[in-house]
Length: 420
Ligand SMILES: [Zn+2]
Ligand SMILES: [Zn+2]
Figure (cartoon, rainbow, N blue to C red):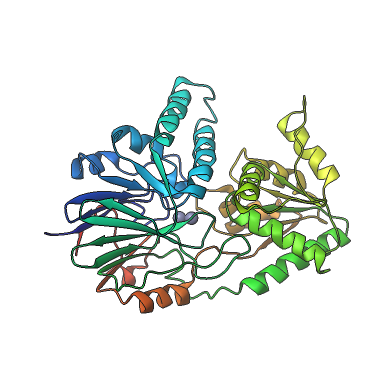
């Protein structure tokens, strides 16, 4: 029987991850994300429905919205299909998808459309089957096993076992490096017949030197507070924010930065609270606190108040998307030459953060110091090659990246049919 892999979204792009596997006749969908742009936010569900009128299983690898942000819409199309994910991702996903719906309806809050999406999300959550890593999910002759992928809490890679011991390995977003909140990815012992590997940084020569970037980040924080400025660290709500707040606490403990008040704001605050529960460990302490909520103050007034109280604000969105708390904070700090804005990761081209960093004109309107450090939760090329060497796949396809023209041969584009 012919086995197929088809990226419905998230092939030659980062966003709207949605991958269909047809293995020994079973139709397994991995992820249902959204794009960072509002123009065409969803995977091509019409195309998916034409390929697979029914699905046997949906697997969500982790709770970043480029992997789960449209799970409620997908699930409404396949109401009888269970959604498998880890216990941690199930908890984080509810919060992340709800926030994505809120952001998408920022201009028509409380519309019927918005409420319909929340209802669909509730229904989708009732179809979620929580699994532990290494549990075997049986679909007739096919078995699915979730492996720890590092990256963020709860993140999994997906191994699909079929035939006489054959295996497909779908890496999902993966990191072999240890982080403060999550360990390294673990790979199955078997050789893969097909390896579907994320390629966020595969086409880049950059080698991650996390320790160096972390030291530089702390150094900027120290210099900024010493000259009487405030620090804004825009960060992704899930994963990055928790890593940075632990880094700041550690920096205070070992004297790399003086004791300062750090407020965590926006979605990062709520995700950090879930992390505390899931990790059974304190992320907040006397110095690092959730930003307070104020009664009767406008959003901007609350941000002003927080800037008066705290030395450092860690807030979403990481890309300074218009209207988010980090965007408001950045506007409030823009004219203060003593202050700093420290970016910490990926920036989508349509975001204000990307435009700011790439436009001299915009940059000149900011008198505060602007820096970018790279604290990635993805593998760099060296680590991805290590995965290739370990799994010795018969066939490899790359997804979740932007291949340069000369490297497109092994990259699976959206709608491309890969046979194995
Ligand atoms: Zn991710
Ligand atoms: Zn991703």
